[in-house]
Image 1 (cartoon, rainbow over the protein chains, first blue to last red):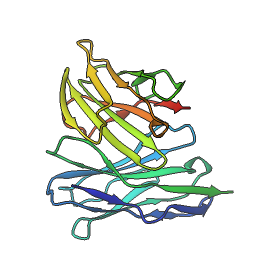
Image 2: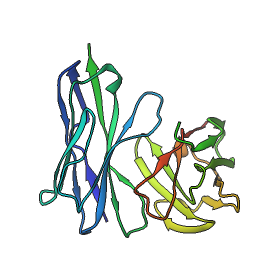
Image 3: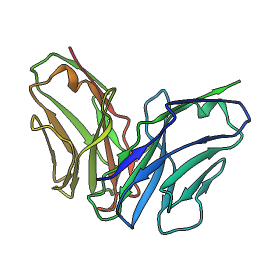
Length: 115
Length: 113
């Protein structure tokens, strides 16, 4: 079974600053995907970024980038130039490519961006 | 807008009752997933259907059941409700069995009193 751990229940950052959210996972699978989802107060689950494990290059989406360390089973999210709209819960998630396609989520990190 | 619709948005009911949550997947998506988000259990996968057939099962209670209809919409039935079933229930969909491109619906907030 896969497990996903987010060790930071809450974080805060000043507007325009950079913040990094941590995520570690445990799996015996070799082919998998990793995700970061954002859940704002509206509760909608919004995909922030996706990383295929076979790709060595770290995924980036505008101000969001990941640091994927496969050997260490670490998948951190960096948010640059933080904006007030980034205030939300952030969930790290894992999906094995050949194991039922379900997402396994971490416990979440609540991020507050302060003006 | 993800294209995935869920009804109702909110549902308030009493212990022991039965409810049905409905999900319409994004146009063209054949696979539907149900997730439960509760305060104590976090986000958990419940069940997946692909083109009408059950594909994968997660931590779904025996009191819960689901199905996917020929028009691809899905229903999650929750019976003999308990206080602990109060949660946000998400439906998600994807084009193929591979869930790597998954879109989530807005969720149904269930409150059991």
